[in-house]
Image (tube, rainbow, N blue to C red):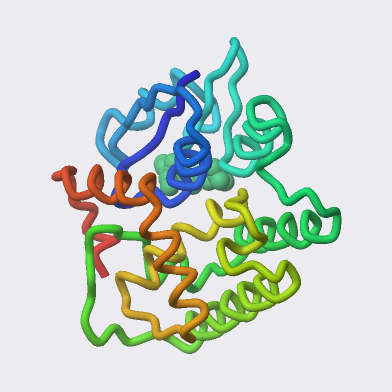
Length: 213
Ligand SMILES: N[C@@H](CCC(=O)N[C@@H](CS)C(=O)NCC(=O)O)C(=O)O
């Protein structure tokens, strides 16, 4: 099984799929294509006509898009364990992922994931502030309904993988959190797979100027 990803430092969509697969101990090979380099489009098109990372190659099947990859991994390789067992928690977790997948545009545009960077006194726009408030509300709700003191819905799930890029953003831009959410953020950052991702990001030398806000 192969996962095609972009730069560890910048590719938030790649991180989601990679983290789920790495944290759950699946065996796979990573193929990295540096984003926005002259050869990127030609190289990624060898794997997917959508021409975006991440792309999963498994058993002759191509799966593109981070959410589709996580769903496939959960079904084919984790016996459904990518999602919570309880139907209500599962529906909530799926809603959380869908909201992340289709929303939070201000946060995504104005506070790009840049794992190795920390910014002092970052000034947040009103639109990003609203996105941050909504994410915190969603995390609070998930932790409350699941009663979890670990991850959003108890055991690590696709929802945690989906919000991991937000966690790196909160870390980089110094977003203040309540003690409970700060503890959640630290738990995710301290996962061996997250530490490994950060180390790989630190080793990269490419700089994408637009992401260095
Ligand atoms: N909806 C897609 C979005 C993927 C996406 O936008 N990937 C970015 C990198 S993080 C990309 O490949 N950008 C290259 C480009 O737009 O040329 C997913 O979730 O996988």
